[in-house]
Amino acid sequence: MAEEDIEVRWLDRSLRAGSQNPMTYVARATLIATTGPSDEALAQADEHLARALEIAPNLAPAYALLAQVRQASGAPTSACVELARRAVELEPREPRFRTSLA
Image (cartoon, rainbow, N blue to C red; front, side, top):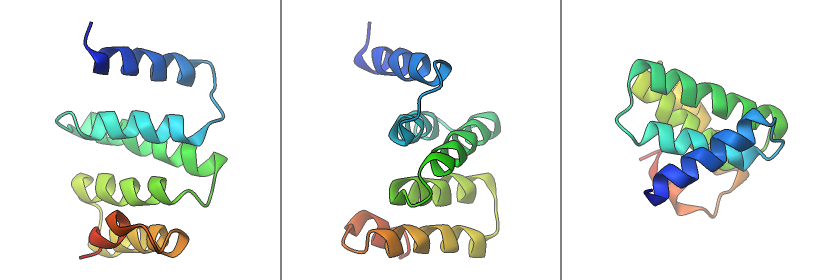
């Protein structure tokens, strides 16, 4: 079994159990968004990120990935930029969040 398959199974099991760890949702959204995102996959990633932000409203990685997911989904650029800016505001020293604004 591939390592990614094991990770997906573990994450899905955690999500079904009602995980309260927001990074579990971010990790699952990351895997979804990087495996050839279809409209359905992007919607699912968006839902996971929204849940992560419900649990931890100041979670910069969730905002950064949500900006990318929504951009790929065709959301208005201004809305995506605001999400990316929020990530930078929360973690201004994280370079990967800054590069997403470039």
